[in-house]
Amino acid sequence: MKRISKIILGLALAITCSSCEKETTVAPVAKFKINTVRVDAMPVVDFNNAGWDLFDDADVFFNIEDENHVPYYLGSSYKVGNVAQADLPVSWSLTSQYDIKDISKITYVALFDYDVLDENDAMGYVGFKMQDYEAGKPTTITKTSGALTVTITGIWY
Ligand SMILES: [Ca+2]
Ligand SMILES: [Ca+2]
Image (cartoon, rainbow, N blue to C red; front, side):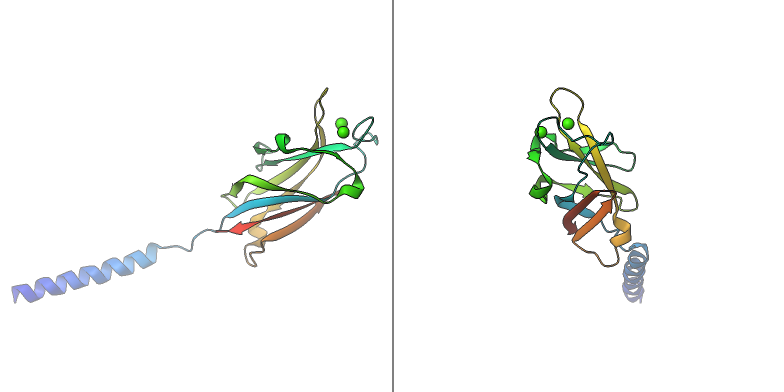
């Protein structure tokens, strides 16, 4: 009798445990990893209506920034020299994937023209709020902001 009640107690515990485990398991929050960044379109001139460089075309690179525009991926060493409009699109495969861990926040891809003698020229930025894409989970997303169009590809995990 004693033994039976022990077994029953054990069973009851097992059932309770498995059911409470189920209750505490919430749906995993989706995250996104950026694998490639592509610039499909970029502004022809800077904010002063001048060309990006005096004698030739823009030397293009991008940074990936968080919602406060703090850069977490610095792409200046992967710049592509003298990109004319006819050269577009240009794309980069990231050497290390960029993890967007909080998809409720905006992740910016900011484009620059690399300059040697003065500060790099900002060419614009595009913001991606991955939460907006969570339902369909597309792996390629294109977004335009002003004259700049950026496509990111990656994986949901
Ligand atoms: Ca320049
Ligand atoms: Ca140049």
